[in-house]
Image (cartoon, rainbow, N blue to C red; front, side, top):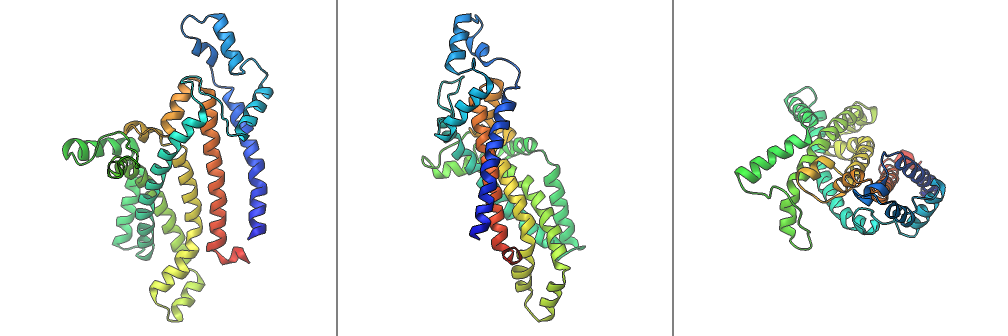
Length: 313
């Protein structure tokens, strides 16, 4: 286990360095000049020169990268050109919101997708299988923005049960936080649940047709033991991969859903930063998201190691 972790960590650090170079390099390809955009309509040459000096925009790209990555290693992601705040402060403010939304969405996805996929596989070719497939197809086909708008019309406008938009910190009002987050979490979770249902069904069908499952049943083991201990455990490997990737995607920010429900997360932050050519914010958010993806893949590898005894061998 220790050797396995060291091998993964040895790959992780160079990957992060390479990702940081790509992020910084691609950022420079964005059209427009942030110094001119920040200078305003008058575009005074002295003002533009001061802005370039302050944000190191007058230096060669390799020097700017070294200055940026050196600051990142010390926890300094630079300063937002648009709102004059440290990027690290913006990340600390927005990241908990996005993490909460991602966790709630994954709970919805797991609560719907895993049972539906198992039932569909166990009743393959019968009516529960057809119902689960229809529900999964509906989840894959329904756009998030449409479902979000329909839920707002039903639960907020017509019934008045939930707030239409906004965000409340769980530290201020836990109940108000749940009420504000339940609809966006359901909107995001149903789409992931549909994909998870299809993967779970496919993995379970493959495992249920294996020789060791027939042997376990022939030995007289109860069906619950066969399904729970032998089938589900071996079918979990592709589901773990999917869960890690989807959770990483949620951490990158659900742009449309956050816009519809006015949730101040990563999605809204990065969209505003791109439109305003706020390089430091874009680089900080994308680097944070890329790091989350890499760490989640590491955790998925560890989960494989724990779930599948053959990998330990």
